[in-house]
Structures are given as structure tokens and as C-alpha cells.
Amino acid sequence: MVEAFAVASGKGGTGKTTSTLALGMALAETYDVTVVDADTGMANLLFHAGLDDVDVTLHDLLVEETATGVEEATYERFGMRVVPCGTSLAAFERAEPALLREVVADLAADADVLLLDSPAALDSKSAILPIVLADRVVVVLQPTIPALSDGIKAQEYARTYGAETAGVIFNRVRDDEETETIARQAERYFGGETLAMVPESDLVRAARRAGEPLLAHAPDSAAAAAYREAARRLDVRP
Ligand code: ADP
Ligand code: MG
Image 1 (cartoon, rainbow, N blue to C red):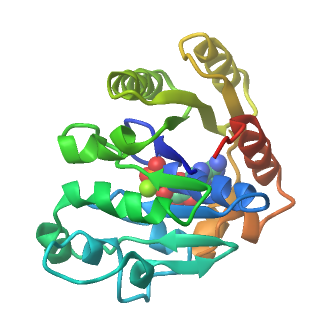
Image 2 (cartoon, rainbow, N blue to C red):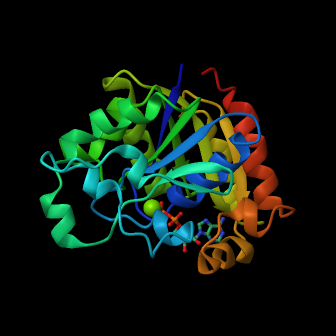
């Protein structure tokens, strides 16, 4: 059995991709983990995982006529299986987003945990598909009022489509009263628990520049520790 998580937020730049790879690496210490860049319109997980030079990606799996098997777009990296998505607009236009359902079903056969890095905007059927396909949704929020309102929407979508909220990761929490207060107040709006408060950190940016997940680039950082704790709290039940 597999447990599938969508990592979503309702807003861009909150740290979904960073969080997907960090949780993936933490969970890969115990489980067979497959990470999918399901943000097919604005894919960027490949840059976070040093996969920007690969030829075959999720886009190729989302074309009906091609006989590309999921394994051809799956790369073993950092102890996980990673299915990146390409950045070409032409490939995105050729892709049929609804085929993600079949791709996810194929990938589920070989994994304990599937993590779906999800699009920022939840404004179309294809954009919410990762949430629809997930068992649980991890909401990634920056502790600002607008981000919270988007996060509440993301959670409503999850409920509407039958996914539970696994919890909230507050990301880019600065060491000041304002963000800490917002994060603490926000806890009561969300059904799921707070999985982690991930600090704002230069090491997170440096990891992205190096094309490595945070847990590979800075395993001893406070941010990495926060993600390991979040992975434990997820209480995965494949
Ligand atoms: P999303 O996938 O939600 O669009 P990303 O994970 O790509 O967000 O993060 C957006 C940018 O913010 C990246 O450049 C990333 O390195 C940076 N970032 C994310 N989390 C942190 C953090 N805790 N501290 C500093 N920079 C961060
Ligand atoms: Mg992203």
C-alpha cells in the first residue's frame, strides 16, 4: 500500500518544492519514497534536485500516444525516486494533465510514500488534481495574513475532494515576534497540526542554488531538523 501526499499552499513561493524534497529525503530513511513534480505548468523541482539536464520527464508521460513508461522518467536521487517535470512550454501544451491520474497509479505500485509537489494556483481542474489524487495534503504557508487566507482555501479544496489535511508547515519563520505570533494564531484555523516551523535560512537558498535538497546540502541545519520532525509527525501509514 502507498500513502500519497499533495504538498500544496494556494500561493507560489511558499516553499512547496523545498518542502517536498526535504520531507521526501527524511521519509526515505524509513520508506520507499517517490517524489513527483506535479506542478506541470511551472515545474521547478528539477532545479532543486540537480535534474535540469535530463531528457525524459513527467511531460512525456502525460502524452497519450507515446509509449513512455513511468520508469523512463524516474531518476534515483538522494535515496528517493524522483519524477521531475520539464519546463518547456511546448511540452506543457502537448501534455494532457488528466493523465496524471494514471501516472500516479503506476508509480504507486513501487512506493510506500508518494509526494506530489503541487501547483501554486488552485484555479482549474488540472491544478487541483494532485489534491484530488492525494490521501492527505501537507499545507505549506508563510506566516503572513494573505498566505494564511490562501492556505485556508487550499484546505477547503482538500476537504471538498476527500483528502485529509496532514498538517501545516510554516516556512520562512523569522526570529521575530510578528511571524511567530501569526504562526501560533494560525494553528487554530487549521484542522491538522503544525508539522514544523521552518526558519528563514540562507542555507535553504544555497541548497537550491547547488541543485540539492536541503537535507543533502545542509543536513545539520535547524531547517533540516525541522523537516525531519515534520516527517515524523506525519505518521505515515502506507
Ligand atoms: P514553491 O515551490 O512554493 O514555489 P520553493 O520551494 O521553490 O517554493 O521556494 C521559493 C524560493 O524560496 C526558493 O528560492 C527557495 O530557496 C526559497 N526558500 C524556501 N524556503 C526558504 C527558507 N526557509 N529560507 C530561505 N529561503 C527559502
Ligand atoms: Mg515549486
